[in-house]
Image (cartoon, rainbow over all chains, first blue to last red; front, side, top):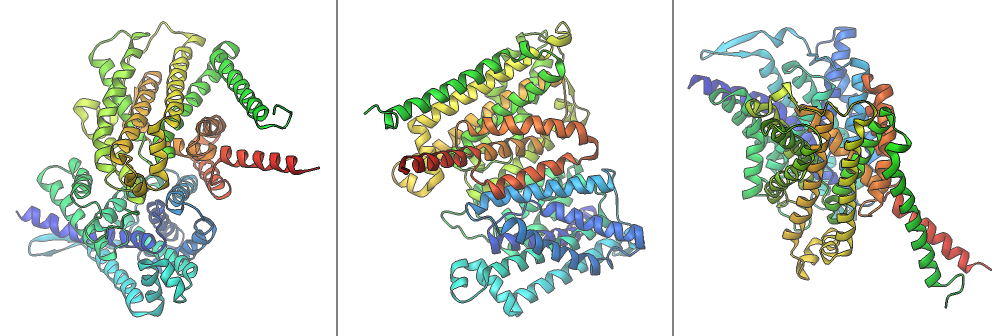
Length: 291
Length: 337
């Protein structure tokens, strides 16, 4: 029983990281109606940027976010301008292919620079742990969770307390109507993409401290993130966060109760169940011609 | 009205042109192992023809109905494993006999596709794409974790025909791949001309309206999905026999899944000849690149670059763009002095 409880706590802590990564993905979908298949690769890129800073400047991984998040934000805006904006017809399908291509490109470059050996971000809190109620919890999970909460909080503040956030939410609700009331939809899309990619950088650091990664890791990551946002309902931030927590807690408990090998399947089993019962996801709305 | 510029002559001439091109292509394809018997060339030919078949099969679903599946590698890998396991457990002497198992692997893949399609086709557009990706990873995970059945990450070795030595070894595989590609093309051609195909195109243009005018959309989509998957599974089984050794990441490879999509897009989505042209252009180039830069993974960059160029500059693909160009040129010439 205590093992299950411990697994649940760990699931919530790691769920926070996935919530952060998935919220970037679902934000991008909500604003632009595109699925960023390259999101996993961008997370891994963020992890490698912090890895490079650590290797060359011995910068603490979490501290390096001060550098990598703005860089990744700029990269996101650039990618949107160069590769997403030119798509005029059939954006939804074509954007999947474009972002898939970006993922392959990032994987290729990272493989060329860093080889395909596994790496992990190192810091003192990566192995040190403390005890609460008899559980041993590694610091990194707590730090990562707090960091993700802080960034998610900042994201919500931006979205719900600023006029830019109002424009983003208006665009998510109805693109044409937002345009009619004077929202510069193209600018909102570029900045939202930048924001999504910047959160990927933060997710990448936490992922990189808690997991070994190589340029190939993005496949595993993106399949999980996509499953999470489908479960939450495409374009719903709340849905993505709750779905991430549900998925990770269930996965970690399965790992303890059944076996770690089958824990991966839980993700997909839940996905199939959701699709049969509620194809629009937890918080999705069913639009006749979209979902 | 049979003057040089009349409609009848023009259609006749275009048809004759097409028939001639097709005949030349068919002769070259059939005689290739005799023209260029060295194994390096025939090996490339096996893969190129394989992708002609894969892209054509994918196009039956992705091109005609507009449902983009990025997870067809699941069916490729499933077909490969179904074939490999049958071959190993039935103790069939390697040679020509195992080719008889290819349709069996196709049937097994089809039954898997009925299940996957039933769930995945409850969703549309973006969600469908995601679900197909997820299913691909399910199949990959299963192949890896059902160690007792598949051998897991250690892979599965297949018996191979030792008597097919030297230059001849690739030839039977080449013809098997060619036969499957031709079957896929004939099916694609027939579907395109049939009422069923018309229904699929209607689904692509507007699914709700198609349903409203009486197209049984669910059945049609599922049928197209299953046909497409079964063809891919059969091609996967020949691939497994040719490779003689398979493992999960090798046959359920996301790159194979995305390659057939890229080829269909490059040539022209929803056209008959598009996927063929796409595969004939891309696969040899890709093999060359993987051969030169494979170790450094830079070939992924080549992939990404081709992909981005195709989608940003030629979003409709070669065949529709060239056809339009040709028609425009024709019209201008007719209107001239």
